[in-house]
Length: 295
Length: 187
Image (cartoon, rainbow over all chains, first blue to last red; front, side, top):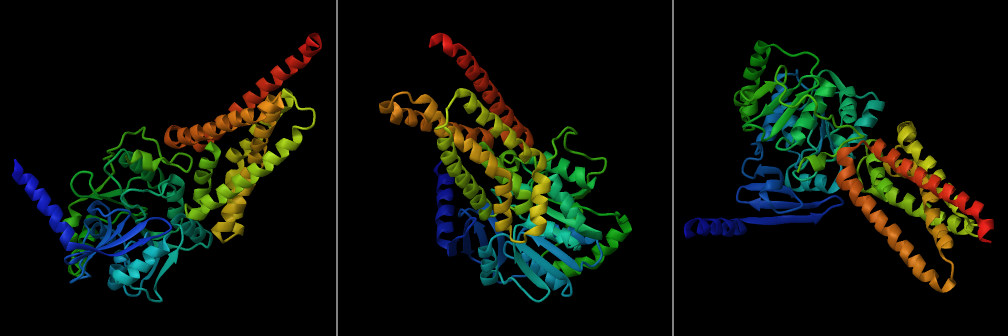
């Protein structure tokens, strides 16, 4: 009876000892905490809770990716040729940007982050690499994309990663927004979105993506935990083409702790496999209670 | 307040959800309310009547409707002409919310004028009015943000607000004209 309690107490105690906050700052949008826990350095928003880690790196091996969902984003590469223009909405620790830059040093990468403090922390603690090819813009993602569309800019890999654990910018989860994203996608390009998937929002999100892109691809491990949506492909590569790409990517991605062959197993298309009710309401600028639906 | 809250929703697709959006919206609402109070007070000195009071509601209702019909082209125009989303959002909320909020602001002082019959009760009546209108704002805020946005489109909510205001205005005008017709009998 007392044993489990004792273990819990020990765990709490040890986590208090071994994790220490090395940076704490109240930005315009949130509390930013950088926590140092043994070999792992994590960026957290708002509260000191492992549930809300935004970005983590291994201090001894900063190239090895920590989070599964970040690794899953790289499944995009099975469907596109070498990316030249990458757009990342939501910087976090800059991990995605760093890995993509190392994989494709000639690719232009534009990171868009609303919170200047996040960019600062990414530079200071997470080795966020910036070059003349890799830049970051402090702006709301929606505005950046709207302006990019006006300037007729195109990107061949657009990564939407602006949702943190407890708050969704609702204007980044609507049909109109996805249409704007679609308008700046190059032919042959792909959109990868890190999404929520454990609530009522799952259905609404699926219905909204379907309304704009038609059938899309889900990358998701055990049922409905973390889901990466891949959408916007103008033509689906054949299985052999995908296998070829996977073989080429496998050694290159393994450096970053990404097992692309393993990720391949958790990819499935929504074609003939709609797991949301047909009458699910599509989220629009007029109707977007994403945060309420996520409860 | 319900409209102010929806303002954030309406502006977000063009101007984002940065802090300055709320700065713009709150600034415009406070500015136009203050002007509305001034104008309403002034208006109440010229033969105040229930019909005129109802007329303010009616005008308010009419001035809210364009928010649901023309907000997209207005915001698109501002978005393409102003790069800085701070001034863009300020101008957009000015264009969309200034006139309706000025008119809504006129209601409070006009109500004081209509309800105050004895000057020694004026403080009490003003107090009750502040109570009612601020409580109404609180209810409008919570109902809109907690429930309306989950059930309805932004436009439907705006139209419902407009229709409600319009109906209240019409009722006031009808009662007002009845009172006037009956007035000679009582006199």
